[in-house]
Picture 1 (cartoon, rainbow, N blue to C red):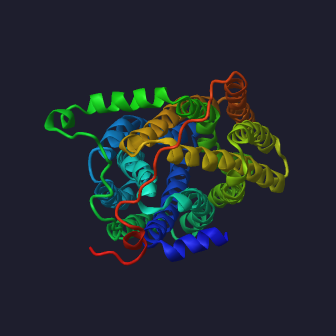
Picture 2 (cartoon, one colour; picture 1 turned 135 degrees about the vertical axis):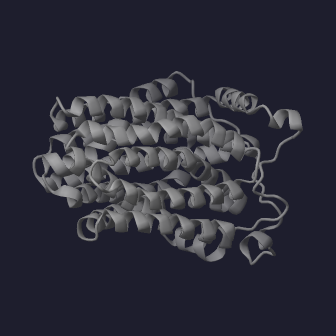
Picture 3 (tube, helix red, strand yellow; picture 1 turned 120 degrees about the horizontal axis):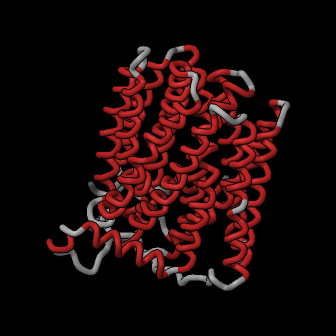
Length: 433
């Protein structure tokens, strides 16, 4: 934790990025809890909840490739700001879907919000090497992800409380304000000499007009590095059960444990707390592992995640369910922090936007299929058994990863050079605008 505090104190750019992240992601969970609770209140259907998730997943799947190409062509900071501003407007419009009979508005706005999201989420990951030194990069990655999970815990608790006590409109309004604050923070980032634009060998008008060619180049780059292909596999493997898990939180909170929006918030909160613990542990552990030990740790993390989620799904006491979901998400966090640190270490700046966007697209594509299956099953199969299937599918990811390891298909890649645009004094001090 001392490393996190030191990073915030010394690195101005990262400090602004972190401040915007905290506020906007807490606001995101105000929206998430309010939307799920509102849809269940209006329809009492697990399939309707799956519909919301699909309305979010499909646009993410379609927008991901465009976001990746754009982030590797244009100023990443500007794209992130525009993403925040567009989402601020959309978040405020959710109040139009509160009256009974207007649930279609929730689906449309959810779709538009997620279409704008990958320009920010993949952009935030891609700019980390531009705002952190080589020595800070692992800490910056761990802190970014740990913060994301901390806001899951805090935002879920507060989101459930706000939806219950202040109403859905207040949750949507606060979410809109959070995006505006994030845009303000990102606008204050400064690196000299066009540091937020990816370094490329050439940039002519012909290439700019061929985004599909750029995207194919990104896919070829991923295939050329076995570890990146392996990380794509585990992203898809986790999402095979992880998609179902997304719609199971409100179903467990409302149907299984009968605790309403607060129960949904408590489950999300316990999951968020587990993610934070796992992220902090991974930050400590990763520098102490060899590459071979890293690969074995990833396999173990997926086994633990799957087994714990199965136990969560079958838990009768509420406290045991909270404990098991916490443990399951701790394992997810360990794998996520370690895997993203590897990506930042080995991916060239010219391809970083496309790599992150492609992995995000693969994850959301499989999550879409998983959510569809879970949603269709939710009105016919007991919620607990859907949870068991979700845990088994995600846990089986360990089998493929372990096979790739023991057969030598995951050799250690060569790290890329890490260069901060300009000198470190300008990055960490108060740079000129």
